[in-house]
Length: 247
Ligand code: IPE
Ligand code: IPE
Ligand code: MG
Image (cartoon, rainbow, N blue to C red):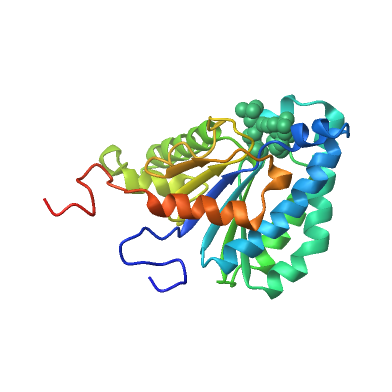
């Protein structure tokens, strides 16, 4: 593991997942409308993608809109979708040039055709890139993802394509939106909230959690690096004994 953060003794953060939280509070603290926080949040996304590549992280997954976020005011939802559209329009070429492979996870229902088309085009354009695997969780909820997977397994069982005893952990994982992705090593949530909010419940089974006290628009490269450093100080055991103990 030879990137500059690597150390034979320390875990390397291959896949980092982030719950980007606190845009609204960032704006409220400044007496600004919430959309300003979301706008600044897009800047943080740009910085974070860059920083991930600099740190040798190969997989970055960002929670950008949850299945539950539909309960927000219509105007805020429109603002968020508008920012997504603008982000893809402005940044896609640059991301592609930098070798970013884009993937989108989440339900395809409820989304306008133009958003779906735009996301599909971004995935198609970048599908052969390998520098960074960027997964955008959009219209994503973990329970919804697991329920959709269960539905497809049930359909395949009905058609005789899968037998009950074939439904192993590995097989089930293949039905999730994240099929083929390694599980996240590190989960970061900004804004000081200590919960998962229905994010990657299956995939985070053995991730290390780091909660940082800054709002998402204030998530700098330094804060990111410190979260990764904190992760590297952890001892991951996966149910076994300490990796560093000799006993
Ligand atoms: C994160 O910031 C962005 C989304 C969830 C879309 P919030 O909008 O949740 O900001 P707070 O948590 O209300 O401060
Ligand atoms: C989680 O943040 C969803 C995203 C970051 C997209 P929320 O702000 O929606 O989570 P809760 O409602 O505080 O749990
Ligand atoms: Mg929030």
